[in-house]
Length: 98
Image 1 (cartoon, rainbow, N blue to C red):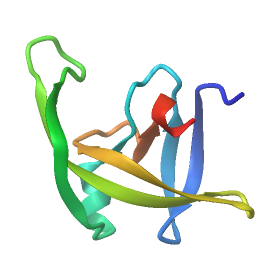
Image 2 (cartoon, rainbow, N blue to C red; image 1 turned 45 degrees about the vertical axis):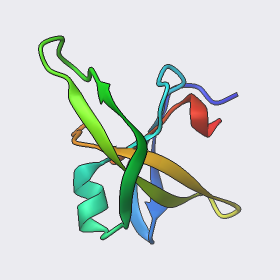
Image 3 (cartoon, rainbow, N blue to C red; image 1 turned 60 degrees about the vertical axis):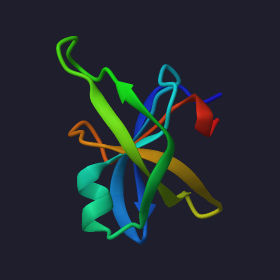
Image 4 (cartoon, rainbow, N blue to C red; image 1 turned 90 degrees about the vertical axis):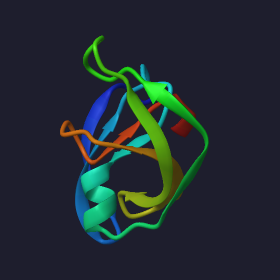
């Protein structure tokens, strides 16, 4: 079983910071990473509000992106992630990824 962990992983042959966090109910990627890697975004099928770090502000999640990632030499996968502005990492994988 994977525990909460910080990793460096390859996405589009670029090293990115990934957090695997079982306490998260969603997979998210940073807006910055999606823009810099020129990942194709699509409208979220069910936009929602995410209360991120402060109780005063809600963040509206309106976009998704498919992220192809590899862990080590043998594991490769494509994960649908919601696109949000965040600085903690490039990708946060939560329970939906497991």
